[in-house]
Length: 90
Image (cartoon, rainbow, N blue to C red):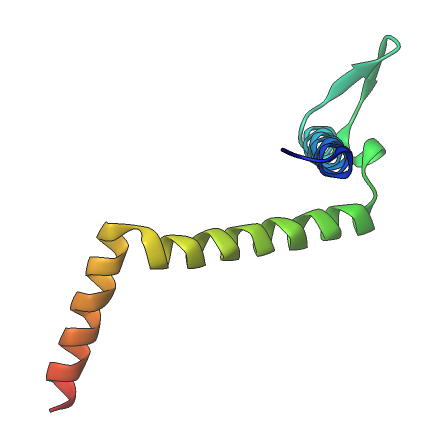
C-alpha cells in the first residue's frame, strides 16, 4: 500500500503537469481574461518560452529513444539498416 508521502508526491507531480499544460496553452492560444483579449506573447516571457522549447526537445528525445528500443517496427528497421550497413562495408 502506498504511504502518505507517496500520495503527496503524486499529487505534487499532478499539479506540476497541470501547470505545464497551462503554460503551453498560454503560450499557444489567444485568451480572454476579464473581458480583455490576451496574446500569448503577453503571457509568456521569451526566457520561459526557451525553457519550454528545451523541455519539449528533451521529452521528444526521450520518446524517440524509448521507441527505438521498444517499438517492434522501429527495432526491425534498425536491425535491417545495421545489416545493410555491414553488407555495404564488405
